[in-house]
Length: 276
Image (cartoon, rainbow, N blue to C red):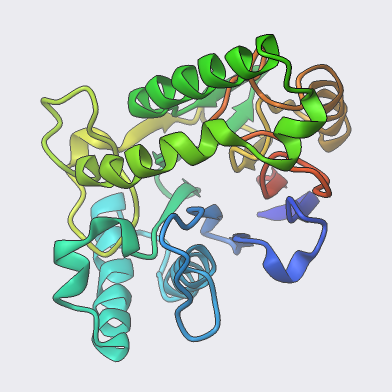
C-alpha cells in the first residue's frame, strides 16, 4: 500500500501540540485521534491524547498483518498495561475513567479487506463516506448549541464566545461523566468504543467491508466534518464550514467550536491510500 496524499495539522497550528497521528505499511493503514483531555493532566510531558496516539501507533507497527481487530486490541492493551504500570496509575484509572489516555482509531486491513472503526473516525471509498458518530456526543452537542444560541440572543457576540466558550465549560463535567459509558454494555445507546487499555465489546466496533479490487481508500480523523476522495475537496469543505459556522452551533454542530487564535475546530488528519 502507498500513501499518495497525506495531511496532519493541529487545531492550534502548532504541530507539536497535535494529538492525531497515522501510519501505513503493506498490511495496515491507520489514523489515530487522541482524545482531548478533560483532566488537564500530562503524562511524561505529553497530553493523554498524545500519549495514547503514539502508543497505539507503535503497537500497530508490531503486527504481522493477519490479525483480526480483537487481536489488534490485545496488542494495544498490553502496551497500555505497561504504560499504566509505569505511570503508577493502575488503580486510579479504574476509579476515574476520564483520566485514561484514550483515542479513536480507524484501521484498514489489506489482508481482511475490512475497515474497523473505534470511536469518531471516517473513511471514503467508491464515492461513499462512512462515519462512526456517537449518540452521547450528539446529546452534548445539542446542549452546547442551545447554550451558545441563548448567549447570542442575550447580547454576546461571536467573538465573545470564540474567546470564552461558556457552552463547552458547562458541558465539560458532563463529558467527564460520559467516560463511564466507554466500552460498556452494548445494550445501552450511550455506550461507545474507545481505545483506552480496557476490553472493547465487539458489538461497539463498526466494521466496513471493502470490496475486492478497490484501488483507493481515504481515512481521516473527525477533525473533518466531511471527507471526500481527495484532500483538496476535503480541505475546501472544512474551509467553508469554518466560514459559515465557526462556533459549530448550526450546520456543523459539535461539542467545541473554533477557539480564537486557532486555525481549525480540532486536530485533523487525512490520508489517501493506493492499494497495490
